[in-house]
Length: 432
Image 1 (cartoon, one colour):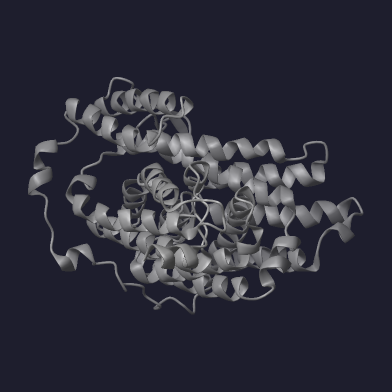
Image 2 (cartoon, rainbow, N blue to C red):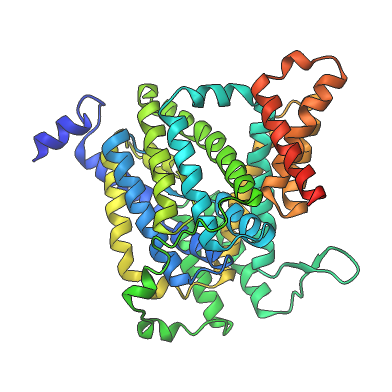
């Protein structure tokens, strides 16, 4: 058995051991397991039953990790992505008016397009067409959006009476619980404590219980039927497939998925000096996205937290397979996961958002034709509460500024087409 594992994953060839790979898989799992509760909570904002959202998140993570482990053979964990789940719930459902069933259909169709891109040369064409500044701006904008969502979930900011946003009541139990949990979270994170997000959720839940926000004693009584647990499986609806809204959502989601994952996968395979595995890993990523729509969750991405397993020595797909099996075991703890309050999740959203914000240092602020479109993406994503609209405004502004200063040749024909499609969307909205 060991010889087969060694040959299949190339453990010895990659200068590692089975024990090290298993250890890396365990570390990677505990680094990213928080996604089960966080993703389910965000999906519930789209109207999904939270128990079913938890199951869908687990199933998608198990499938994604096993697929990446056996097909990609790299220690990259595939789990529902932060930022993209916000796009699913707050933009496609709440802003664009799709039902969560129709949004799942959008995920599936975007996954199909992603698969076509991943298995052809389109990935290189699209990646080369979009300027580095706009790619970085999308990440930063998503980070700012996640921080805003975290602040709202924790009650730290709320809708103001004389302003758009205002500081929440610091005397409320939810706000106090969020603030205390955030202090714990940021200290653990800065000190680089292993499994810091998982510890944060546990401590945050205890703090919320002490403030009377949840009844922890009801965990053992929580139960639901198989129909409820798998209520979102295969629930995607194509009833709105011929509408412009549906295809705008597909276009926006596909753009975010392709750009984000190209960067994530490339960076991670380079970190372990296995760039030859990029194509396989990217292909596994695309298939996992397509399956997410069937499983009933927002798309999976190459988790940034995969670096924890890599830092622990993970170099092959065995690391990812171990993490995937641990996600399967986590299904037995669903009754407890469903009790986790927003005050325990909000600090994690704020910290992840802050990490994504740091990418702003990669922008060239000296060239305003590069920086202004990027800054508009960063600002408009949270201000419009729409990731797709924020991206659209930046992509339209970029070629306009380049043409205005006589640098139209710096814009690729592909980007002109993309900008034109975004502009047409706004025109249709006005005419409609």
